[in-house]
Amino acid sequence: MRIVLFGAPGSGKGTQGELMAKRTGFPRISTGDLLRTAAQKRTPLGLKAEVVMKEGRLVSDEIVIGLVRERLADPDCRGGYILDGFPRTIVQAEALATLDGERPEVVMGIEVPTEVLIDRLSGRRICSSCQAVYNLAVQPPRLEGVCDLCRGPLVQRPDDTPEVIRERIRVYHEQTESLKDHYLRLGSYRAVDGRGTIEEIFQRIVHVLDGEIGMPGRETVTA
Ligand code: AMP
Image (cartoon, rainbow, N blue to C red; front, side):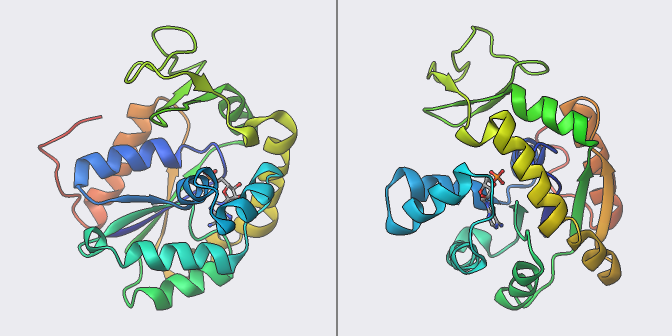
């Protein structure tokens, strides 16, 4: 099962990808997470990427494709994977097609109006210790500023400030949105309404995947 989660920043790819990973047992591969980890480790690649990410621009295709190539070679990806935030350009989509001889079966497009994206990204908080994601409006932590899971301090991502949010959404329209047409032409794009609660959106995704390829793990975990 090869799934691409596609959508603008704030559309819920990370949250839904985690739920899908729990449900299916397939790893969620987020290029944003891979880049943030490289930045935290202060690797040369990470330091280079960090500057670009802070400005809300896209990291070079070369760097991102290299990271994905390495990650897809890991044994846990053999049976399938859930890509979150990749591909974001046509060059990346073409690279994916050659990296893995098999095409993604489904490109799940989570569609959300821009004003909702801005609200979600502005309210997002991340645990600086375990990376769990919260939203002050719809999924607040039990104790203000503290992670429910590990008690770590919650912080705002440096690219979730109003100015950088605007830039990320602009970059999405300019460089990524046209991939929808690319995958529509290939017949693999499926649109999902990304408004509503986390559970409602997840049920829509499950419904689409069940119809397409039979989503595994149905009995085991619910959102
Ligand atoms: P995300 O966590 O998916 O919102 O990504 C955070 C940032 O990482 C983006 O704003 C980009 O700067 C960078 N990034 C993540 N994925 C990619 C990608 N596929 N291509 C280029 N840059 C990316």
